[in-house]
Image 1 (cartoon, one colour):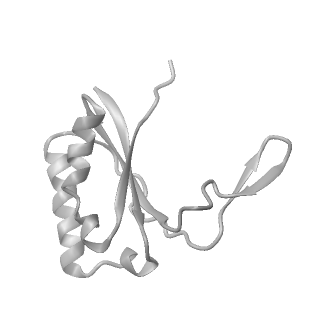
Image 2 (cartoon, helix red, strand yellow; image 1 turned 90 degrees about the vertical axis):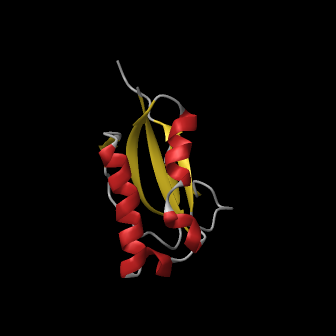
Image 3 (cartoon, one colour; image 1 turned 60 degrees about the vertical axis):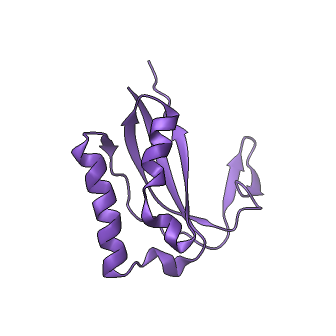
Length: 113
């Protein structure tokens, strides 16, 4: 099996403070992944970041970003186990983050030998 990071993004910092009902929905979604024994790392469930971001590049070159066109912020992540990226995407599709206009980026975690 491979490992995939599900990176949660929100448009508004207010959405990072869910109602008790929204929190329960998120916990139910996560419990479903745990029940399948596919949760590798819960990560930080909340990384509230807003404002500007900077990227430091070789030679101490500092740029805005990493992506200046993105206005959303990363609110958290988890790492899941799946056979394919399509399977990881199916897990992400069931997350209630979409109800508040959020999205989930799915990336394969590269293993070092």
